[in-house]
Length: 274
Image (cartoon, rainbow, N blue to C red):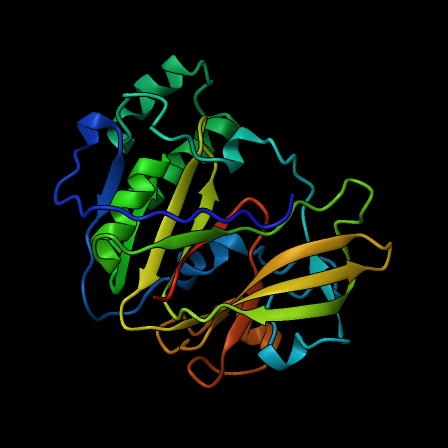
């Protein structure tokens, strides 16, 4: 399946409580320096051992006819962690304080890789990060509530996703750019899939910043076609200056855009222009 599009309108919900299992709201504050490892790295792998691996690009790199190396992980289209249910599948508490009881409920051994991943997810969802609107969501309803709280009531939006690469495709290979189409809306909300027993996404948007969004058709060396979502962050001035994107691009923060492809396990909410 290619990009999935969901258009919907919604009413602003002023208060949502954790007791209903809908959404963990995280406080937003103006100013300060954001942690780029959380902001950008959740959907993009850090630098690996492969010297050809490149996660970030300039917009001029992603033009029709050009060839670029891209890492697309293998996933199942039906992977439950990739898809949000309409409502949160459980009324269990979503908090770091409740982690011991959650581990017992899900029969996950303490100190296991799964337990440590859950602990990191709960920590990331509760930590305060300045300069962002953000929430950890676990259902379509909570996504609608969060987006409505940021952009206002009754605003239609669509969800963009990168298609799943075939298992016969190498995880990392060269792709030729076949087609590039920009989404006209400048308002978008990246949502990163986090490790948890059920689907949880960290959705966030920096205060007073602009992203450009593109749908890109890529053809791999093995002939496989991927319909990808390209996110270009136009203002990197608030990113951590040591973030690895700047090393890859050979630039300093705030001097140019930084673009990357959204992995298939993430999603991007884009407002539909009137």
